[in-house]
Amino acid sequence: METKGGLSAARETLHTGTIADVLDALNVWGVLDPSIACVNGVAGAISGRAYTVRWAPTRKQSDIAAPQPPTWDQVKDFLVPAVGNAAGRIYVAGCDNGLLRDQALAGGFSATHLRAAGFRGIVLGGAIRDAHVVNRLDIPVRATGYIPADTQGSYRVLETGTWCRIGTVVVHTGDWIVADETGTVVVPAGIADAVLARALEIEATENLIAERVGKGESLFKVATELSRL
Image 1 (cartoon, helix red, strand yellow):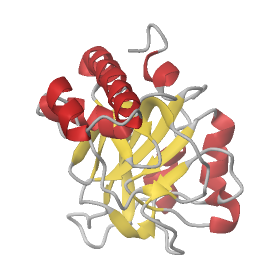
Image 2 (spheres, rainbow, N blue to C red):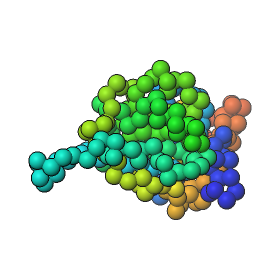
Image 3 (cartoon, helix red, strand yellow):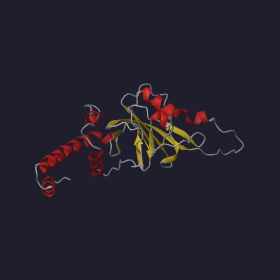
Image 4 (cartoon, one colour):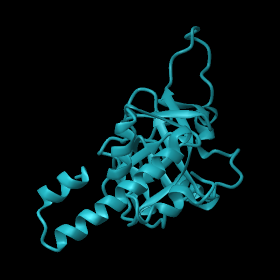
């Protein structure tokens, strides 16, 4: 999908609903929970390859008298220092135990850092904080909402650049993220070419439906004839 511009090139014409329909026909569920929405008002569709950060709750050690690892050591990799140039990427963070609505997976400093690193968007399987900073960023930040509490001391980063879970959807680094006003969809990298080709076909058909209905034809008649609605 990336070789000829892929979803990055097609994002102005492809819609998440179309992509979700194609994935559904392939028995793939890639639609993220609708509570994950753009919190900072940056308009327009966006797409790019995912770079993942996987979070999980912290657990006590077998020796309860042993000192805990420093909080910084548990969370520092969420800033993905190994990524030298994130141009064209979407930062995606998720938590093993579901959507994290009551603690923030990122904040103002980290979101600004990710923007400076070249990420074209941020998608979180949970909340974010520091609205006064995030609302000034010029890249879309999609999250369940704003909240003052953060994850430090309660959650740790297990790994980056591999995979993470957002609700019921597993996202691998390299998968495509497509987001617009309707929602966010994850396209597995291995089927991305096929999804793109079929989505473009569907969009062409829907443009024809809109044109014919706009000229006064019955939607029922046109949808029946073209087998699409």
